[in-house]
Amino acid sequence: MHAFLSYNHADEETARGLGVQLKLVGADVWFDQWEIRAGDSIPGKLDAGLSTFDTFILLWSRHAEKSAWVRRELEAAIQLGIDNTHTRIIPVRLDFTELPVLLRPLKRLDIFTPHAINEAVVEIMGFASDRERVRAIQAVLESAKVKIDFFHGYGPTVGCPRCGAGLEAIEGWNQTDYKRGDTYAGARCKECGWHDGGEV
Image (cartoon, rainbow, N blue to C red; front, side, top):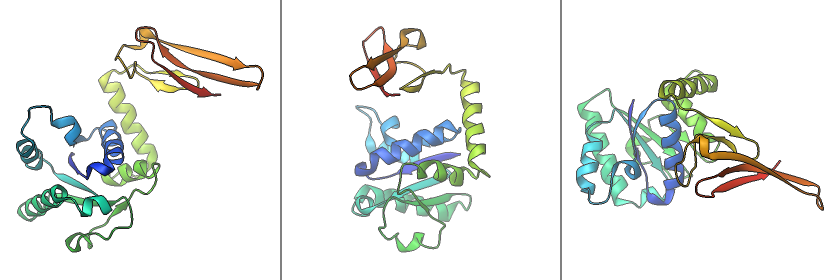
């Protein structure tokens, strides 16, 4: 699947979350924050992205409704859908803003909570269940030969999120607040000093 994510920048967090989850199951995702670099032609990059997708995912919200860029991307996607019947347009509502008239006959998805992203991925990819999504993630990680470790209080990691050091630089930590009777744990980077965690 070659998916193009269309969204307004006010909805960037949800767009990024959906894009990451789609990549984790093996989809090729065009997300402007990953594709457009300093000095690139924005219209040129958008044109390239819009010419190669087979699935157009429209993140629709009150912000997207007011966005001229989102409207232009949608118009291009509709035209491509007319020219190529294999093109899918998937409207994804982020709030209760009414969809454009041409999209109302299409089956839509709703992402009103962060948990709904996983459900949307299952629908977009055509998985039979969430277990199939999990198997797809595992297959992608295995094929990429990604080494993952789990740190109590922080969670799974492949390296330092600040400096990019590998797992060899990450160590677990734990600390007890004896006055409150609380225990905290997490992970830290021996190279840059990054650390994170929480109560366990």
